[in-house]
Every structure is written in structure tokens, then in C-alpha cells.
Image: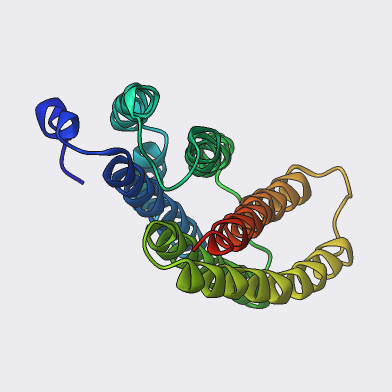
Length: 221
């Protein structure tokens, strides 16, 4: 994504800055997911390139500062300032969790035990990609279509439920492999799965907050 011009950001309102921030975080999430696919394919150069992109933060810091400045100066808003700030913070948490996962993955190049395990990892990151897109669209809909925001958030929760089933299946497979339970590979695989699901859990929690906002503000319409 292109570098953001500060003069352009200054012309944006709170809603626009929130959407720009969400777009940045969604793109980084998709880069993270693509990076995991590269890892599965043992394309380590592309894997490293993607994850190094994920841990960059300069543009996000710039948007965050501008958002906070505009928010505290604004007098009129469809949501309270506290709700807007919390919404923005939850987007930022997606960035933080994704960045943490990227940092951990860059510490090692995990070895996948077999093709079945690779397929299961591909399945859960496919779901992670879907809920990343859903939550991004839900955030964009909060300002003008609360019903759509609510419905998209429900899709996140449904997809997350299916991921939970897959999570237990893949963990069960991991625990039943013939390997030392304190082996480096076991720990790396377990951390990878837990990191993916931590990100999914946060997106699911975020979707519930969007549903709360949708319900709260639909009452006043």
C-alpha cells in the first residue's frame, strides 16, 4: 500500500480515518495469511517478506494520531466519542495481535509434519481471511448501515464457530503425533495454531462489540 500523505489525512474526518485505518489493518492481515501460505509451501523468502511488511507500523501510528486529534476536536458525531475511541482501539488490537504473531513466526521456520496437517492449517487460515474481510466491511457499514454491520458481524461469529471445531481437530492431530511433547517442532506448531486462533477470537469479540453498537444506535433511529 502506498505511503500516506499527512496533508491528505488532515482533510479526512473521523469516519474516513477509521475506514482508512481498517483498510490498512485488513491488508496487513491478508499479508499475514498469505505469509502463512508461503510458509506451508516452504517459500521462505516470500514468507519473510510478507511478515516483515506486517510488523511495519509507521503509517498506522500516523493515522492513529490524526484520528485522536480529530476525535477530541469534533463536536458532532453519530456515536459518542468513547464508542468511537473503543472501536478504533479494537481495530488497533487486530494490528497488535497480527504483529505479535508475525514476530514469533519470524523467529523460526516451522516444519509441518505431513500434507494432512498442511491442509488443516490452510483451512483455518481461509476462514481467518473470510472473517478479516467481514469485520472490515462491518466497520465500514457502522456509520451508515447498522443492519448490515450487524449481519456481517453475525457472519464472523458463525465462521469463528466452524474454526473452533477445526482447531480442536488439528490440535488433536498434533498431540497424537509420534514426537517428543517438548520438541521444538511441537512447540512451534502449537504456537502457530494458538496465534491464529487468538487473532480469530479477537475478531469475533470485535464483531460482538459492533453488534452491540448496532443495537444501541438503532434504538435512537
